[in-house]
Image (cartoon, rainbow, N blue to C red; front, side, top):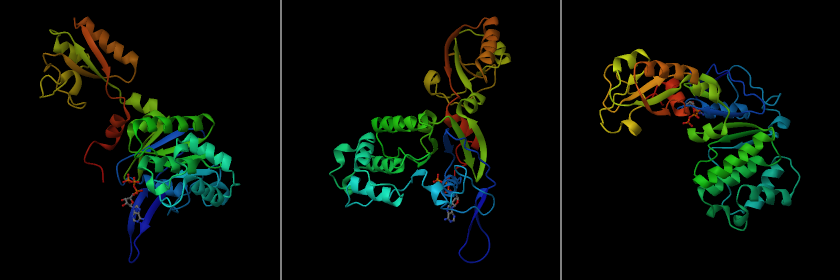
Length: 321
Ligand SMILES: Nc1ncnc2c1ncn2[C@@H]1O[C@H](COP(=O)(O)OP(=O)(O)OP(=O)(O)O)[C@@H](O)[C@H]1O
């Protein structure tokens, strides 16, 4: 799929999506991540039928996103929520339900508000809600009518850690029920906790896509500390890179993930990095290190988080638009 935003006058335009091909399996919890301006919102809008692709097609829940029957099965939480400040949340949900063509069901709406932790705030005007409360109300609105697909743009924006836990629990319950979740979040830890699949989008193209555990495994890096006196040359031959961190003393906790020094330049504190796609490779490297007389003191997985995968795919700071 391609999307070029045309200029109002004259020729040309801005190509936001440059040949994006993405399949989101039904029932998955799918996270879309990428730098600012990558095209994430454009893609979401095309899934919702708000933006029409310049080339290619979008199929959602087996149909067209422009089909009202398909749209009715999608719950959407936009990044920027516009809520009527003078209203109260039950009236807001009732109106959204009517717009979605759902039957009026005050009891179901009350349960939904309880589920998102807003039952104590039903008598208050929405204008007085905190950012987190507004997000929760938006989530309740997205959940109206038990959608088959939930598209959430920054759902935990402004929500405190306990609230995030609650939102995550709700999203996990939905996925367990068979709902497909499509999440766009800058909070990578959130995506990591909620999603089982991830696509990395940058400059209008999908750079990586797959199961989170597989993407993470591919970039697995381990931080290892050996007892003083290890043979650095032998460790280098076994794949261990001495960490080059000028800040002496920060080795165990604060050295740069990418700051590896050539083998042979090992530091007194014995901290090294080793890349190992799986535990078998890791253990083989450790066996080689031990065979050279090195004694293992600490071992910590380093490169398997989503941030490392993203930086690895996109190329590190400075690429964000
Ligand atoms: N209506 C529009 N008209 C023209 N250009 C647009 C329009 N909407 C988005 N763009 C451009 O398309 C590109 C992709 O924007 P988009 O909002 O989809 O990115 P994004 O990944 O959601 O970014 P962010 O993470 O900052 O929200 C950007 O360069 C943006 O300036």
